[in-house]
Image 1: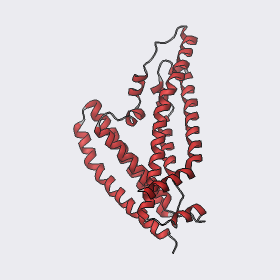
Image 2: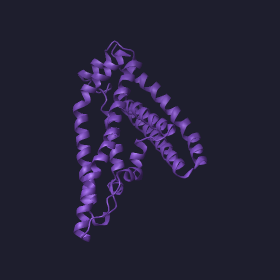
Image 3: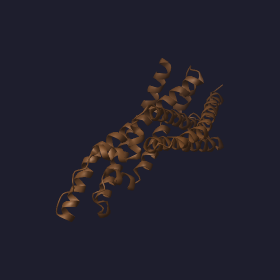
Image 4: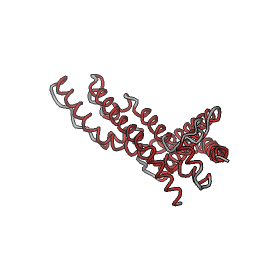
Length: 260
């Protein structure tokens, strides 16, 4: 375990600069988009959740979430076999330990992006509220009634998924995080047509996870118990099979890439 944590720390040191730039760019982009949305006449009085949705920030968050997972450690199948990749492959560790360190690093980076999104959503509520009040004074001559941050959190699908309210939602969130970390690590480990296949597998698993999260939300909000059960029976077996296959395939790729 100590070796895994040490290697994960090394992976973090390799990725921290690019990760910091990614998070800073994400924070700046979201603030700019939310303020621009709040300044539009048709968004007057709509609130942060509507500005977030109209600005397509959920998709931006998912993109940053995926990019963060791809920053974890060196690509072992680099055609030029960089110094970092060669060092990683020659470490006196079994392939399973090296893969675990990669997945752990990816999971931590993605968890950081998820936490950052929650913090940004809370912080950006106040400048968006100020922009909305200024626009209402300009257009209507009176300030709009102050909106509730709690209400805006409840209205956002993205924040709803990132703040689990029950054991099932927490379990789905953990499964999604770990599956994403493993599958994105697999994309880094393969090359050529294998990398394309890993991307397709990751996309299918991503659809499965989003389907489960959406079904859980509908179950909590509307009590669609049959729909949740049907989606669980359809998507969980597919997700399990693809994740287990990806795990085996990733270990095989590490063994094949190791120098003789």
